[in-house]
Image (tube, rainbow, N blue to C red):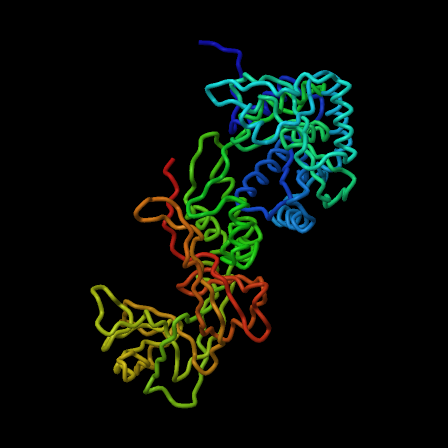
Amino acid sequence: METNEKTVSGNFIEVAIKRDLEDGTYSRPIKTRFPPEPNGYLHIGHAKSICLNFTLGAEFNGTTNLRFDDTNPTKENDEYVKAIENDVKWLGFDWAEECFASDYFDKMYECAEMLIKKGRAFVCELTPEQMKEYRGTLTEPGKESPYRNRSIDENLRLFREMRDGKYEDGEMCLRAKIDMSSPNMNMRDPVIYRISHDAHHRTGTKWCIYPMYDFAHPLEDAIEGVTHSICTMEFEDHRPLYDWVLRETEWTEPPRQIEFARLNITNTVMSKRYLKRLIDDGVVEGWDDPRMPTISGLRRRGYTPEAIRNFCADIGVAKAYSKVDAAQLESCIRNDLQLKTQSRNVILDPLKVVITNYPEGRTEMCEIENNRNVPEMGTRMVPFSRELYVEREDFMEVPVKKYFRLFPGNEVRFKGAYFITCDEVVKDDAGNVTELRCKYDPETKSGSGFEGRKVKGTIHWVDAASAVPVTVRDFGYLLRTDEETGEEVTNENTITIHEAFAEPAIEDSEPGSRWQFFRHGYYIEDTKLSTPDHKVFNRTVDLKSSWKPKKK
């Protein structure tokens, strides 16, 4: 069967934009926007929107604006504006224009008066409770406000008096006059302006009335020349109102709103309101706490912009609700760091080992590769002497089956050094193991070319005399799955602190430096808590991945 219809590839948003280009829908270049409200820090869900909007703008040789939707003076401030700017730049994007909804307050006011003059808006004095009662239900139509049929002149007078500060907060509002029987609740005479005497972070006290988001959003897009307004699915039911505002305020070539499914990740808080509560309740240190899913928190935890961009590309764009496994995000950072970071030996839970046949007072240097997957990163020299530290979990007095690490009588390789055999276990009065006494084979130093000797276990170690004390912080998810209900609840145990020992080469680290701690995971030196005298490291991700990509 022949057809003249062209096949258009890409996700559904790309397909829509390509068709608009083919049809000549817009006489101006493609333009998208990322429009956060500056009432908190951005989180990983916003990263998906950032990547999507900026990528679409670049893909179609267009531009993308960063626009702050600052129409609610009670919750917004300049701290959040600066944090958002920083996050977008850190992710690797730059905007064509930085805009604010507050830049357009005069124009929005003009549009509101236009609606009044056309008989499409009225000043209403119903209380919020009354308005809810009049609104109706999903199965029953609402009823009209008794103020709906005021004259145009009276509505203009009252609206101007609202603007001039004559009335108190909540005393009246401006509503669009649409259809109280509409099956779409958003079209039942929605509020488009409300009174608020709070000072605005940019306009101060110039205004005491502010546009509602559903009125401001389409006007902001139209004023900036946005062609495609990319929103999350919760705005799908608001699209008829978006189109109504643009039509009634008489914009030519109006923007087109397209919705996609917002990002949801297992064990991850995706609500700024919830995140702020965690801060206010002292559960976390702040917006950039490494446990937080904020972009600043992920940055402090050691995530890279490349990993986050790769994650957003991997999960794709869809309309259907779904929840992404947090392990997929962790896989992206693990894949990004494995070829970028050098390895260091760090002992989180130290157990002392004494090499009884090693000469007292002697120290030698052992050569260890910095990244076994990247030979170009070279090697480093690590001190080895009579007394060492190993991980307590690398010893088992009564070993389980297939346990190949240290236990009485067993021989293991100390990475980059010698074969070591455990001879004696020293305990305190309570029966706790405090020290292992071992012997080494001087003929087995790594790289010496010996043959015929094999051991199944290799463990890492730190020289006790030169060990550098460091603090290491491991993190859990802020949410956990309740075993009884299956629901996600707040996890009360989200941080484990280790007073650890590191090899001397850790002194090369600076705040923000990333490392692989051998056998433990990827870590970053904390940018706030670390000092020249004592280093603090945050675990970015462990080494093992439980996530497997779907087979194609």
